[in-house]
Image (cartoon, rainbow, N blue to C red; front, top):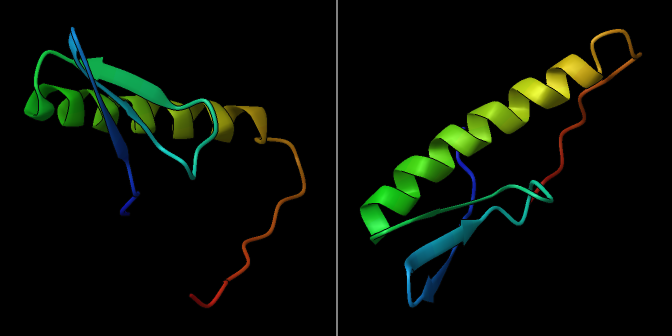
Amino acid sequence: MKYTVVLHPSEEGYAVSVPGLPGCWSQGRDEAEALENIREAIHEYLEAIAELTQDAMTREVEVAA
């Protein structure tokens, strides 16, 4: 699965967010580290959502771009 991420340069390196996953942020000393860290953050975010919706009635919908 692919997600668009936004890199935010800072004095400490890079912060990175995922617009499609509200509240999903990470950071790194350089771009490569920030991107690796956001991959892990996305994985953890999706695991948390799966846990929170485990007993909920859910559906998937497809949206054309």
